[in-house]
Amino acid sequence: MNDKEVSELRRRLRPDKNNISHIYGCYVNERREILSSFDLPLVSTPAEEVEKYMALLKKGLSGSLGKNLLDLSFSTTQVVEGEEHKLLMTLRNTALKEESARSAFFQKIIGSLAMEGNYLVLIAADTYDIPFRGKDGQGMEDASSEMFSYFLCVLCPVKPTKPGLRYCAEDSGFHSRIADWVVAPPELGFLFPAFDDRSANLYGALYYTKDPAEIHEELIDALFQIEPPMPPAEQKETFRSILGDALEEDCSLEVVQSVHNGITAALEAHKASKQTDPLTFSKYEVRDLLEDAGVPDQRVTAFESRFDEQFGAEAELPPKNLIDARAFELKTPDVVIKVNPARSDLVETRVIDGRHYILVSAEGGVEVNGVPVHIASEAAPL
Image (cartoon, rainbow, N blue to C red; front, side):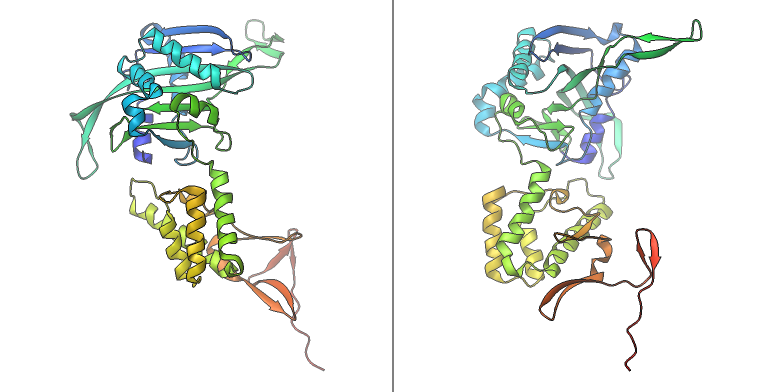
């Protein structure tokens, strides 16, 4: 899925835009016991409550693709005969109305998920009459291309509030407030099936995690039986290690600058082109950047080999999981230098009298701890 497709579905999650008739859920305590399960018909639910439920579901489609929103893909074998895919299809095809399927689904979550404290599971099914979109990208509301049937699931922590004082309008006074339980924004969730090319992709799902460093692999395994993608922070650290290990002494400041600048330039060009498909980098694009930076062929080959080992030969990674386009940092055990990424050319490395130095051009003024300092000119010869 791309950003536009995610946004298109997010816009539906308003009471007046979707075809959601019921929201189903169960409330689970820290001992993995169901305290409550419910079938909430929205037609008889107060509008204010419906909006709050929609906001929770909408949150499950938020964040960045490749970071908070992860594409999961089923194999052909799973789609044909896998029990996990069969359950998801039953939930989708029955619009969540089959109670035994909902119960089996809830038990899969409860039996696998390692989440501290109480939490709420919410699921809702929707049917989207997809408006036709012309070559100019403009939608035609009265011209439908197909019907997209899907469901959303979000898992929300339920946290206790602290007791305290509250204002009471009746007597204009402050009185004791007891502790209560409040539903927090979701930490996990998913959409099934995926909405690829504005059409149902039964081979895919879109998985949401509030914290990219904590994707809860145990839940992905239980619901999808799919090897989860490497977390973004781990992808970035792995990519850095691959560069350093494969290039060895050829991993110079200039080479790292070249890779960083090349990926940043590709990001800017992609943004300017307004392409809908997300930008990704395979080993081939990085190989081209290394070759342009003058890295010897044997080092480039070593990089490709290590890339295959860590990510897979055909892996395509989001650029934001490889570099931080907004930062350029040099670090020694005792010094950290942060540079405007657009001006990394102001930094160079040099060996002077056998010692290694990082040189930074200091034209335009220098401050130390916020204090302007003067750099003395070289002393005139005697």
